[in-house]
Length: 503
Image 1 (cartoon, rainbow, N blue to C red):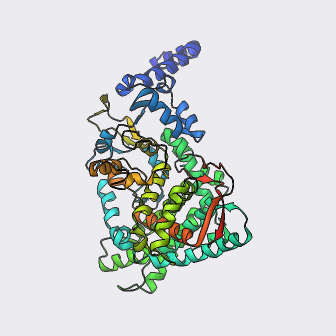
Image 2 (image 1 turned 120 degrees about the vertical axis):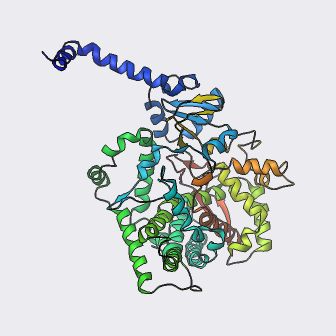
């Protein structure tokens, strides 16, 4: 009898003991892997990822993360291979420009493949630093602050359309879901500046089901990103994905639209001095230097604007409005600043020069960052010491924007909305304290993986908030209303009901 046959016979006879022993061995190995057993945290979480996944599934893990850090300290083990860090002195090591830590496999769930392989989206480029740098470089003039000015005219018609809708609400005096309208506005605004026309989300809603599709997928990613190795047999399998989505092809439709718009620019190439959209700016870059950017890369950037830029911007706008409406002193001060220095239509340059407006936007995004999940990174091959703990190669560590933004050592009285904390001479001790706060501000990520669309998002917010305060008086529909949301990667609020009246 062969050794393999004897082994099979042994397993057959003693299977009641063999499999439990294998299970115990697996759980024990989980607990003691990579030196992580020295790190404090919930005991059960060191054996299995399931408790962490359950926490994320409930949509409130940002609150549990705060409690865990309060109980266990600045370094907490929350899964067999996941360590949360809130020590701000470790930001540069984990996320800095020269970091050796790469993005975790969590981001692989967002990877898209075509007939050329992995689509080079900067969000999912984990290991290919050269390609990541190329993608950042070949669209730099479209994403820069200076580049924004050429796109601003495309946002103004969307603002006008939103005002016409809000005027109807003001005339009727009815309450409405401000959060939903902001989401529609953000979608139309980013589509307009990207393509030169919007999809009329403001009037028609999510007929394309693109926003619904993105919301469902980010919830899936938020939970199953903790077991990324399962993704290829779940939604990473195109057949499974097609069954789950019910045949929905909203992503494909958006890519087709991007390709169609690019084709239009091929027929009538843009020239310097023309009104530029994001897409035409990249097409012009290509015509000037064909090696700088390919059609595939142009489409990737355009699709990235839509998929990542609408939800995050809408969340930021909603956070600004909510916190102003529950902090009337801040509302009144901002209204005075805006009404004393701006007029309709609001220009970005003029609005961006207002110090209190900038402080309000930053403070609202500190209080409610658009991403509320840990930004996972993999410990490099040489291992690392994080927060005084030696951690082995391959372990995942990360920081949560929600936790960092509530560090009382950096942000005194962190649960209070205080825009003046960002203004020198008011709430900031000195310039070093301001630099420390900016280093800990993770609403757009940090380091080389800072969100490329940061300035586009801020432009939309900076234009819209003054527009609303110049034209309307705003209030919450109900006294004591709270900001309702679930944290599944994006902290998208819902049922933010408000009333407005014309000034």
